[in-house]
Length: 72
Figure 1 (cartoon, helix red, strand yellow):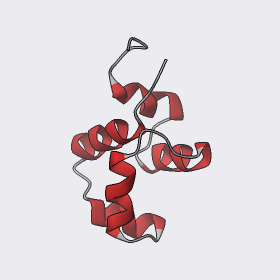
Figure 2: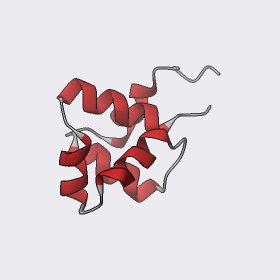
Figure 3: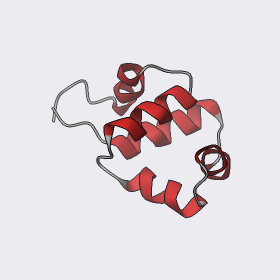
């Protein structure tokens, strides 16, 4: 099963109406880094968990935003 982290981030941002700038400010990174995350298929687990927490989700809930239901 492959989960696309960037897709999860894009969906979470859209659902919560959160801009790249707001995410960047929270994580103390440049907004261009958020753009790279949005295109990334994978990131380190601790970053994924922190971003899920930022959106008020568990890691499992956040990764489920990929929508592929485990089917490639």
